[in-house]
Amino acid sequence: MLLYAVLIFAIAAVGGLVLASSVLRGKLAPWAISVLHAVLGASGLVLLILEVLKGAAPARLTAALGLLVVAALGGFFLASFHLRKQIAPKAVVFVHAGVAVAGFLTLLSLLLG
Image 1 (cartoon, one colour):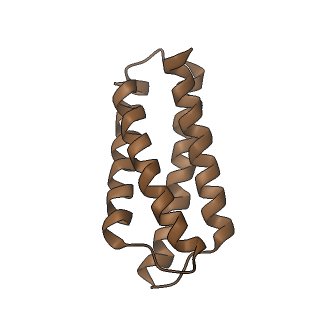
Image 2 (image 1 turned 90 degrees about the vertical axis):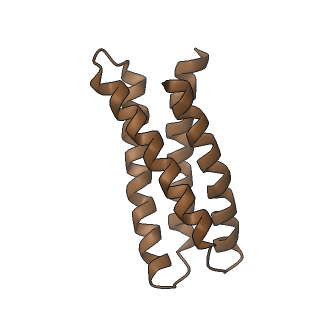
């Protein structure tokens, strides 16, 4: 299940790059990609939550889940700008991406290590 979560988050990250590039150019991000990014991120989180609920989850898995939940909260904040047809603050985009990458790399370290 961890492999599937990593793959889902990797695909979501590609969408996130497209979204971030729109914001950095001062444009609203495409809605379809934004929704797909959110659905993939939520799906990955569900897989991680199920894995943690199985019991005896390694500390790195719990840490990855925590980081990715924080990233998701940042994503909700960014989506609120999108809903108001405003361009999101670039600093928030960078923090959201940074936390998500940290969570993804922490998760990836479980598979590779």
